[in-house]
Length: 105
Image 1 (tube, rainbow, N blue to C red):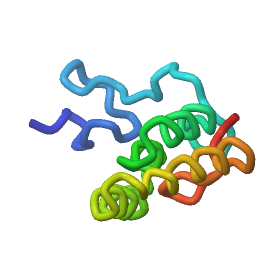
Image 2: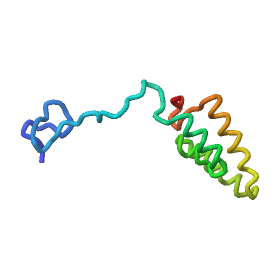
Image 3: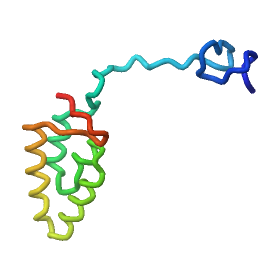
Image 4: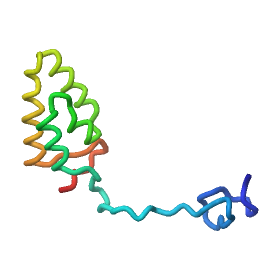
């Protein structure tokens, strides 16, 4: 059912009881262009569970995470060294999330 003004929910001037105003939640806002993912969390996940690509999954980089997982399985666990080194590099140099935004500190 459309509000009396003919507008749909979320549009300006929609003030009916059945159509609550859509507002931005009062969560912490980050600067434009900075990821909501933490560099520290991504690095530690990658160091501890890098063989499974956990840090990369967290960052949204699923392609690299799946490749790390496959390499670890194919090499009987020796591929986890890639995850360890990758985690250290994320902590030292930072990185970008799945959308290409730099990770926050």
